[in-house]
Amino acid sequence: MQDKQITGSPGIKSSIKQCQWLSGLLILLLVIPACGDSKIYEWRDTKGSEHYSDTFTSNAKVVDIKPGYEFYSVKRVYDGDTVQLEDGRKIRFLGINTPEIQHRDKQAEAGGQEAKAWLFAKLRNQRVRLELDAEKTDKYGRTLAYLFTEKNELINLSLVKQGLASISIYPPNLLYVNELIAAQKQAEQDKLGLWALADYDVIPVSQLTEAGHSGWTRLSGKVIDIHRTARFIYLNFSNQLDARIECKWLSLFPDINSYLGKTLEVRGWLNRRDTHFSVLIRHPSAIKTLPGM
Image: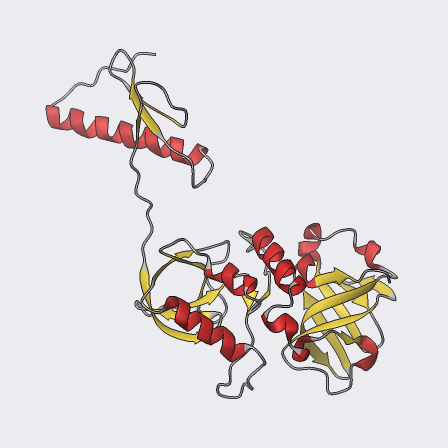
């Protein structure tokens, strides 16, 4: 198809041509998968019309596209998963949780200071960029993000690889879920960081006392009953403990009934209701079927 004739003053012609060029390039950027090795080529046909493609031809040249990343200096490291940028924004890392450090009414948890120290050393004299997911902020007004260095290292993932953080997936923020799960599986297998600490050993349901357990924990037991309400599915381990799953995220899980009679490990935080405890499970990565049981 021939290009339509553009009429008007030279300035108008130039502006229209520029818009056409940008429009064509924008469309190509939207349809080409985001891959680090992808290249975009520009070429002209015999009539002088510009074309763009991800396939090389003999008369094509690579379009030099600068990523629209903006880098920031880190002003403050609060703990292993929260920092403040030079522009004042407080950033909470997506997909992970590191143990608490001592502050205000919070007691220090095993591994918390190590995670903060690692992060501080990693980000010193470094600039970072943010990548957001479905939810942009949390209820505290913090920006939720994946943090990348100028060398394209994903800090959230590195903390998990080192065993300094456990994964904590909050749907619908699932951008790097597969990478995070794989990294935790390897760190756990290699007993790195918190996976080597007695504080995070699995607690059998039968050993759960009335005092409960503070902080992130791991509990194991046999699912003896499953029941459903309008909002939650409950996996009952005993009269003292259940794990609840929000119905709106059931599509992420295997058949819930397949858990019945299985011995599972569940990971998260204990919520207390009178003498009963409950663990909120947001993603199937927080449930582990124990082998041979």
